[in-house]
Length: 184
Image (cartoon, rainbow, N blue to C red; front, side, top):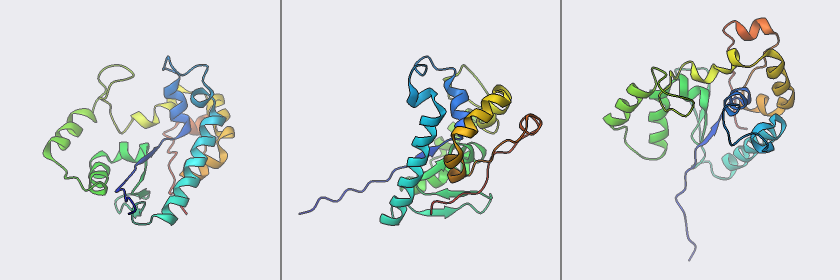
């Protein structure tokens, strides 16, 4: 008798520029190429994309594609971009819970109400202004750092729908790095 597992996985993807900026503040990151080296990080991101393509072909009921009507971005039942979750925390949380067959309990909404509207605490705090947190890197990294990350991450950024900043002026002038993407 074959054992059948009822497994569902959510893959969380983040703009590599945001990941690299965030990791600058972690004591466990320096000296570990899989953490601090943009080429290694983005190679892993591209392998994740290729795995997502394969999983969506092999397991279409477990790894489904769904478009969020309220945004221009695509949400994959098992793939969530950190930025999309941050910009739409209530809707995305409902979608994730639905994917797992779980209810959207009022306490979940209360948690989101208290944890997504303001920054409280340090770098590891769970209290963040969710609409600004994913784009903090645009103010914290120099354009040279951004360009170096982008140059190391061409394929991964294209696959996951992240737009390059082409100048320092563009970067610091309310830059929106998000593009539509699809796993295909």
